[in-house]
Image (cartoon, one colour):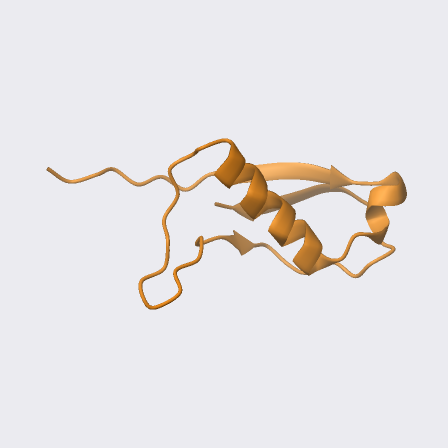
Length: 72
């Protein structure tokens, strides 16, 4: 039996004091949120597996943005 896989696009806003959060901290936040929500997500193969996520583009710190998307 084969498992179906889906790509999910998430749109979020980064405004106010959250504009000071860096890219890696934001990625870590999404990884923890997915793990705490107990969602099924693909993991890399190998010695130290990690969640497979990709973000559209890095944003510099101190930049506000209304809509940004990531693919999980």
